[in-house]
Image (cartoon, rainbow, N blue to C red):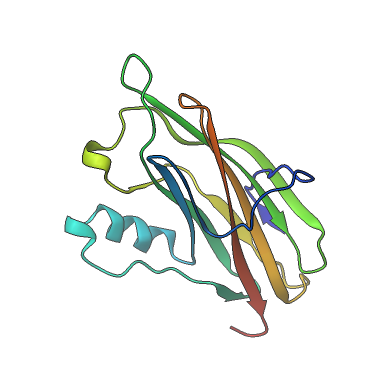
Length: 164
């Protein structure tokens, strides 16, 4: 399995995790696509005009990307946010396939105007090898707004199926 992923700290008691998390004005949601180019086109289009290609199942020998959609990052004194993510990919039997840390989601940029939803600059790319097992994989994201001192956790399931 080839990918670019990040670490979610294990062992700490945390509330039930979903693909969405919020604390105060800072909110994040994890989405997975099998067509990052189309997602970027739709996202950057006028008023997000189309329907972005978001998925939750895929066949082997396919590539998917996990993005973070967020709002409400806190700017530093020079009006720049510092939002990063750690990702972990967990396989169907609970094995860790990969960990990637400090992915720059929104670093050195002004917060989105008017509390707009924003698509992360970076994504976690995942390739499902022919010999990888079918079943439910979990992409865990630990997203940190370093200026506000807030860390939010999400999980997104991705089901690998035969011949999809």
